[in-house]
Image 1: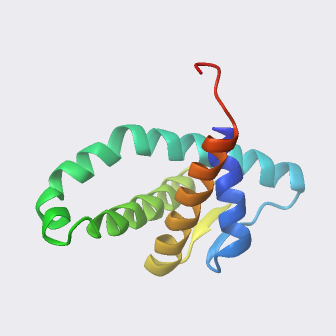
Image 2: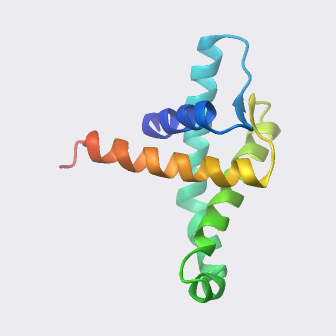
Length: 119
């Protein structure tokens, strides 16, 4: 959850159109932690189903359609955040596309650097 929150924070810094609009720093941190938890749940529950249903397109595009699925799921996280009245917004498909790429790369890098207790 914390790794996701850090990755989301970096995405808000890099990608125009991905924003946290809380009024305080504590609000920003709290929002990022909650959205990080939502991100983890969406990736654990909805992403495998979305990948299964889009498997023919993934195969035809040699895997590139996974980027579109990730963008749509990132956009879904924004919609869930809006439904929960969290100040996290994604302003369209392209910010979702680039935000998903940034979050994926940063999460991967942080998971390489930060070891969990299982290793």
